[in-house]
Image (cartoon, rainbow, N blue to C red; front, side, top):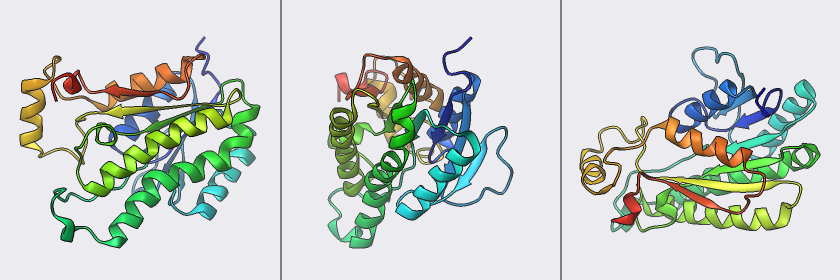
Length: 239
């Protein structure tokens, strides 16, 4: 029997792409999965419980965690996959507004903080007590869909490390930094796709399942915390 059987996992930003892939992988491993998105989906989410709410809104996150605790009486795993960006070349300073900065940092950094803070009492009580943040290679190298996005992921990486130190030994906190992954966000990025196919040793772009496999591995790795693990097919070796 999987050690995740019966565990309760929250995956934010889980209605498509990487978040959806992670939710499906955790459910297949036996976890009871709660999925979050900013808005209510057009179709029901099966078999997971869906809770709508903006992770950048502290009160919405507090209410979401309270609902999980009331329904399940526990919370063992948090995966912060909710993300925001705006596709603007880094040199186009006029293409980014203060509102863009606030929104991107609010979701990608403050959202993860809000969720971990609200979930911490339940994670401390869990025999698993694991957080995995979904970062990006943009937080490690000078790349990414926009300058604020790159900065936000670098901040998320540091938040991962500082939380790992602050919350141990009860809660482990790690992050996965994907390279180019085939999601609704990245479809149509033909130039970037061609670059990955030419330079990455594994000669393909990633899939949500590739990221989900690493998330599951980090959840199960009891002696690993504070790590930022790249999932990029080896692209960073040549880029």
